Image: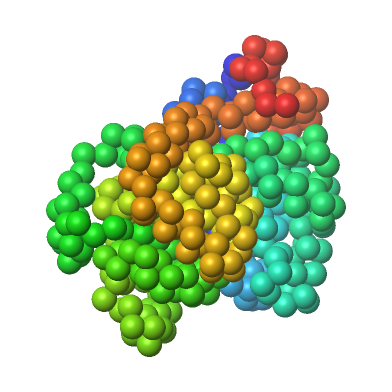
Length: 418
């Protein structure tokens, strides 16, 4: 694909905290911008949180635009200002593709892009904003906004096949508009991590011979810490030397410590607090088993990260988890909220080091190269190229309107995703 000027792409997201959707977006922008066909800009709001943020890296590695009013929470005045700024920035930037992430940025960004005359609009579904754990009215409002934006969206990228299926079942878009592209990451951080598990254990007061069950998530409702706590006594009964290694901080810290104290198993819990993302491979190295008990998630990045380090996983059977946690192969799936099933699966893995090793090795093979950032970038570029080929007439009019011409057909593009 050759044009007189690079294809101009704008990615929009509400915030750049340390989180899965944000890492996905940043790595996408960085990788696509290294391709000669594209000139990629990142636009983000400001929404600080205890997780830390990726803005400093984004300032170093991307063309970054900040719209402070584009926060995550609904604020009518700020949202109107953010929408107006988005519209003006998109129109002035003459972007060929606007690619939105997250719910509010997806709504405001796609409508602004349509009004600004953007030829191609793409939206990534990192998860679904409407779900059973929030009020019916809020779900209906978000579903309505998603339905409104669907006709102006040329393509949807989903981080798991289940998310695509749920969106289609909700009447959002058509099957031919969807592609599943796994959320890429710097996979060699985990596959080739140079770590000392014993040093990490000693840093956090974990005995060298302890069995370690790890969980990486904010201490926040819907992340499933209470569900893990429900299962913990049965696991401790079978493996008294087990340690539950919780990576993350949040509003449930005091609540969880008090629950563990009341259950008489506080000594079995290690609360590591907020850990820099660069140290996550070290934390995973100290674990024997990773548990993922969130009640809703697109496809949690920690699952392929743990598998890349050879750690078997036990997860609630939600959303994209079954695409990486393969029963009897890379771990076990448990019905959400099934504390007895969770305890049994974890205890079985703790009792069998050879089983853990076999599942861990299978996990390493499963995630590489599927979850590499490079793979994700190549697949997103293939989607773009398919859309560019399909929308040649619209692009020609757009380029002529802005004083540009296409100098070569797009037929030489890399194979696209069907």
